[in-house]
Length: 108
Image 1 (tube, rainbow, N blue to C red):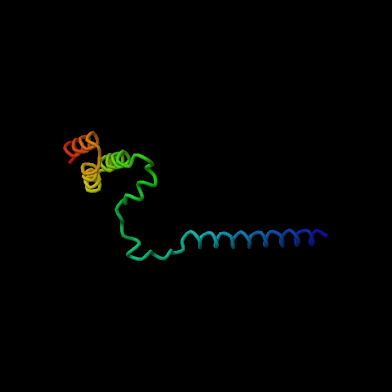
Image 2 (image 1 turned 135 degrees about the vertical axis):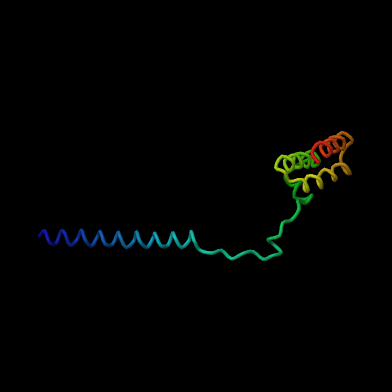
């Protein structure tokens, strides 16, 4: 009788152990599998497009561009900030143009 109980517990224990090991290896496979790299054309960085900004900016695109330029300046990315500020100088209102010129003078 005890032999049958031990045998059934051992069978359950071995089954659980095999399932656990299988799940462990499946998890490790998904964690460490290599993902194919994107092609060079899609992996290259693209500048922020006006259409992209207008999707998130709403009505005041220039104000959003000004905020983005400030963020670039704070993170030390001068080239994108210069490009955005020059766009603001060309397209913004006189107040926005003056603010863009001030930012360029202070941080560049």
